[in-house]
Amino acid sequence: TYRRSNTPQPNATFFDPHNSEGEKMRKAAAEAAMSDMLQWFSSGKGVVAILDATNSTKSRRSWIYESCHAANVETLFVESICDEEDLIMNNILEVKTTSPDYKGQDPEAAALDFRNRIRNYEKVYETIDDNEKHYTYVKLINVG
Image (cartoon, rainbow, N blue to C red; front, side):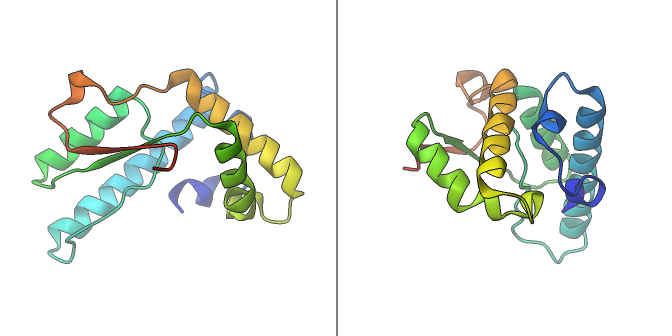
């Protein structure tokens, strides 16, 4: 919702790590979501929240962890790793092509664009590893 309010139907180039304007907008959306989430927790209304975003770099996860830790909010990272192209494309066709990002668009064109979006994520992707073992996390591999 945060990112979509300023970019309702971005194409894959918006998610290219070399797109500085896209990066700036994605960062602003993440910061707004984090701020609202932490305010919700501090109001006493919050117990569990999901910060739904592509938190695929060590620096992004560190920022999330440090922000939450400073507010006495525990974190759980969920990393979903999928390297089976059939599973990826089935997920895209079943779920992503009907998302608000692709409303009214040709499903095949939407699927191709979303696959390209994933390729952009892959350019900077860093799996959770032993350097982040202080985090609580779950890894799902090939939807498992």
